[in-house]
Image (cartoon, rainbow, N blue to C red; front, side, top):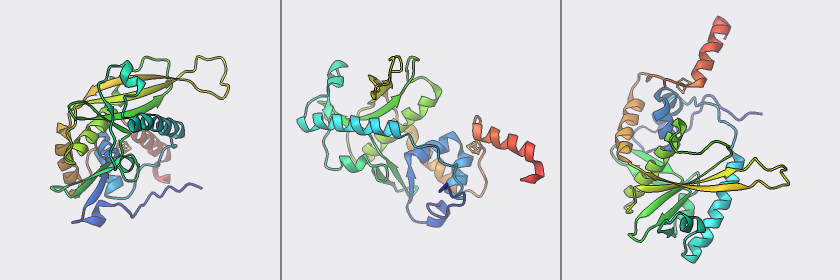
Length: 252
Ligand code: SF4
């Protein structure tokens, strides 16, 4: 049976007025995608039904973390870093495991809005200038060329910039350069044979977190308002909802 609750009473902005309110980097992206659905979710308690869990991606993330942890313990660069001439090693910190946990992550109180901003990173590297480098793992399977330019990958860039912002709030010296470790499942083999092979790619990205703080103020204004914000402009859920309403009319 589905565990989806369309009228949530927990984690509502209205319920914690005056107290710190947790806002994950995913919810910041939800606001950027569509302030109306964000408002319905965080203020009214009706979020969109969850999608299917990406368990294969999670498995790849877990194995990549274990692999990079071996080089972290040895204080050596991973061969991928050597291959791409990244002058850095995996960063070791006593809180790293907590920063990588989905339900914890890096947490920072943004005092002007009272939001506790959270984000769970995949990895951190450190360069000789003692700057932290944010690293995000991505898994996919495509025969198309992978680039960071496709529209939906804007959210990946936002994600990295929120992580860079969070670490700076914690007082770390953070490089604007971040990396996406991209693994692409190879479907050109003749047989599965209980083995999916991946090609590993590395993309660098120059982040700019200057939008984060102003967005937090926009989110606070949105949540404090009694008006429903405008919906996003291109959303399949809304097109579906409008089409359904046309079919059903008053019978809903
Ligand atoms: S466009 Fe409509 S369904 Fe889509 S996210 Fe916004 S309010 Fe929700």
